[in-house]
Length: 271
Image (tube, rainbow, N blue to C red; front, side, top):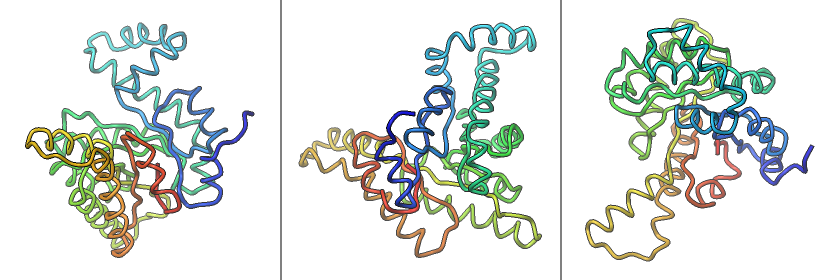
């Protein structure tokens, strides 16, 4: 085993945990061993990256899928690959899932972004992805339709990862929807003990957009100031989550510099 990293030390000494932003088997294996990663993610973009890295593993499987589903569109083939890659990666995380009783050890699989306005179709895909393995966590966008889907999926006992989330109002709307779903389950005496939902804030993308806005409006600012916008939202959201007792964690994503993760070490968050 290679030397364990400072991220490994972080996970041992603080509540902060690391998820690997890929479902590549080789990368995830290394991340678990070296950095003590306790989660991972998959989406169509990641699938393309994994295909390039692990082509020898998948080059024969793609023609097989085409034979198994002869009418499949290119999109359907990609989503089938997404499911299979997610399932493979989830097996590496299962011991962590069992050890941490569902809080960690999950593979985050993304719903189709084309459905961002359709709560029923989002729920249908969410149900399917959740059925792939016990330790799946399903990405649902924090859109108006997605908020409806998040509440209902939570009520059905599905752990969710709210994605496409950039702002404080979105983070609060996600938490409120999650709480409504949990409350409905609790009233019916349904189990919530192994649910491990998170709300992702794409801190770096907020910084990116503010830089675009500033340029469009002719706003001159110190060049470093926009690097703190996403950090500020994450910290404000965390404070509100703690004050209100929301029962899901925040996840920081879309890194552009070390502030987007180093500023959060020590708290009960995912990076």
